Length: 239
Image (cartoon, rainbow, N blue to C red; front, side, top):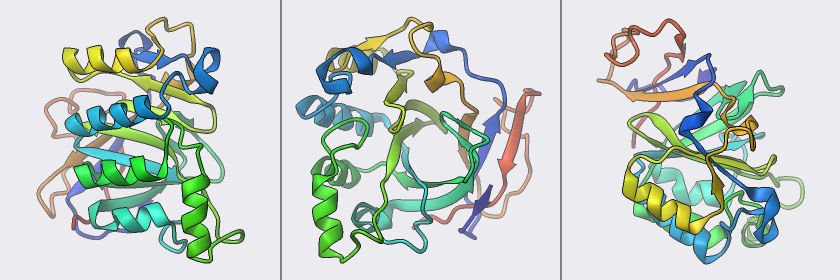
């Protein structure tokens, strides 16, 4: 993993062992409502509002380096970006080649509005609005690339993650009210045998620390875990 940011405030760590799938709800995408598990249109917009009401951070992945490739969504979100890292493992990814780029943002209402204005489904497959914006920026076809894998974090941990290409999503609700509302919006299953790919991942942990702090393993929740390793200790700049 590498980071482009220099001011040390956020750190990213990974846990090698897959997370217990019994704690997660998995989206039943292939059985209903155009393959989006019901999370399209109004239901998608409502889920985004719900996620942003809890999330501290969110992220997209891409195959292209956003440092050198413009994208209309990223440009609108630039003021909220805390950093971009390059890695071969993330939510649902392990040892991928080529490595992916993960752009991480502060979760604010303005970001929710941007996402809902460009996309209309949980896997970000509706490209019409993005294509229009890219054409206006003279970035089609050579400069075209997709943002994928919208993922949300609270207390440094994933609570809702998606894999756009695979059409998979997993949710570990941060509280009972979130779970109740989310289950009403989409077709979720808590049967771990339904789809294990989405939860067979290196567990992402994003931690905010005082600028300049480089000690590792001091977090009270992670210091005792032998399966935990900090995969990157490069800080990501805050705006």
